[in-house]
Amino acid sequence: MPDDMGDELRALFTAADATYRPAGTTTAESVITRGRRVRARRRTLAVTASAATVVLVLTGAVLLMRPDPAAPVPPAVPAPTSTTDGRVPGPPPSVDPSRAQPSASVRTTVRPAPAG
Image (tube, rainbow, N blue to C red; front, side, top):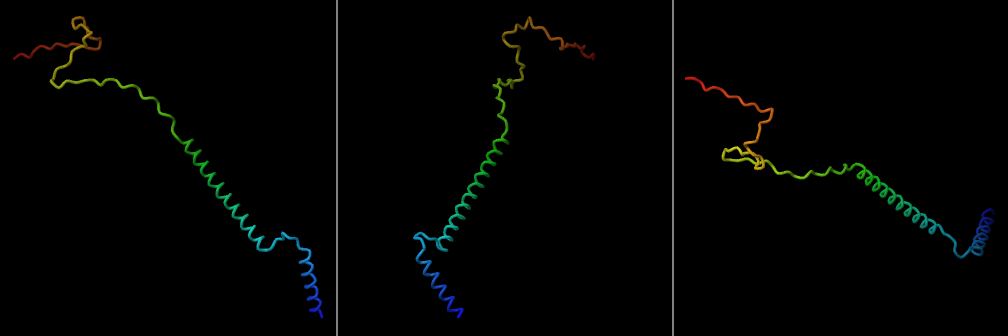
């Protein structure tokens, strides 16, 4: 007898469910599909946020680690010239050789010629 009563209750609940069910009801399949979409959206957001964080950290590190700007390069000066014929170049043309005086650090020593 309990089986007959269980069958009657099932039939009664099924009929009541069909009668009172709203038009836009959710089914197990719709709940599962919605859950998958929510998880996919959250996963995409997490990956995007972590990638943006890595890019920002690397950009900050590069900007903080770059060297200071180099000091300006001084202008070039003409290089000293040398002669290949063995002559020592004279004083610059603006100095008169007869008026040129040796500096205090220059000494002139005359040695006598060896006898013999």
